[in-house]
Length: 266
Image 1 (cartoon, one colour):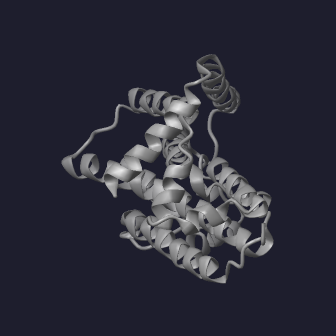
Image 2 (tube, rainbow, N blue to C red):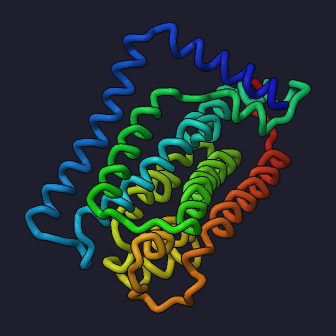
C-alpha cells in the first residue's frame, strides 16, 4: 500500500512539474500572501504592544505552529479538500475510485498532492523559528519530545475537518464554504490567544471542535504561561486525543457517506 501511495504521489508531482514556472509562481504567491498577513499582524502588535497580554514573539509562536501544520495538512489531505472532492461528485468521476481494486482512502490521499503548499509551510517555519529566537525559551527533554506530537496532532485535526467536509458532499454536493469556516477560518482564529474571544466561542472550540486543545493549550505549556481559563493542569497534554479523535470520527462519518453514495448515473 505504501508503494502504491508513493506511486500515486509521484504521478501527481510529475503532472504539477510540467509547468514549472506556474508552479513556482503559485508557491511564491502562497508564501507572499501568508507573509503579508503576518507582517500586518506584526505591525499591529508593534504599535499596540500586545494582544490579550501576549507579545509579538508569543503570538508568532502560535501563528507559526498553525501555519506549519495547516500547510502540511493542505498538501497531504488535498484529495479530501471539499472544493476538489465536490467536483468529483458532480462530474461522476468519484465512481472511478470505487471501481478500482485498491483502498478508497488510499486513492483519495494519492489523487491530489499539491506541492505548492510548501510555500505556506516554509513561511510557517520561518515565523516559528523567529518566535523561538525572540523568546529564547528554555527547552526541556519533555517539551522537545512533545512539540512534534502537537504538530502531528494539529495536522490530524485539520485533516479530519477536511474529511468531514468531503463526506458532507455526499449529501450536499457543495460543502466547501461551510467547512471553510472551520478550516481556513479556524486556522486564523487559532493564530491568536484563545482567551481574547467571547466565552461561547472559547467553549465551542474547546469542547465541540477542540481546536484550542491543539495549539493554544500546548503553547501555554511550551511558553510557561498560566491558564487564564482555569481548566485542569492536564489540558495542554490532550492534543493527541483531540487531533486523532477528530480524525477517527471524521473517517467514521466518511464511511457512512460512502455507503450512502448512489452515484450521479453518468
